[in-house]
Length: 215
Image (cartoon, rainbow, N blue to C red; front, side, top):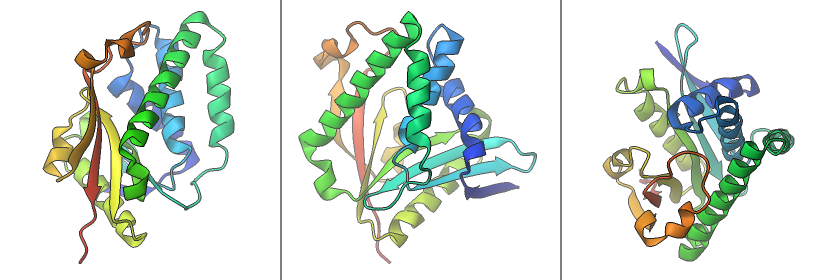
């Protein structure tokens, strides 16, 4: 049996560990763990809802973090935690390089949003959608996704969006009926990969957008 419940602060380490197992690529495991913590905190900071899936043995199985414009964030302590991990990354040359690279990457995603004025059309964003490897293929991702869309509907959201890249299974979003509304391909922007020191960069960055069906 799988339990779906609101995220609590004590879930943070499980989310970070799963994020690192899924996407952590830096050869220095300590830097990889800190960078994964940065990313999770970055997504958690604006989130107005979080849900985790927990197995009957207490195993962490997945999470969604979502933001609806105008609503308060889940936790008010994330900014301080993010500043702490960024400071820790900045204390080593390897950590400082990946942090600088990551902050540039965040800025690039913001520019992609601005280029298509997505905030004029969408009231919500999927900040993080993550399913543990052992839980894939068992309906966990589908349940987390449906629950999140139900939240959007309750909040009156008509359109939402998310960032993803070619390192992820974007076919899930195609199957869910989302539209790819922006893309940035590595072959067209080799400058995106200049001075990168955090593992392989994806071949493409994408923004997908979806609508909430009204009953």
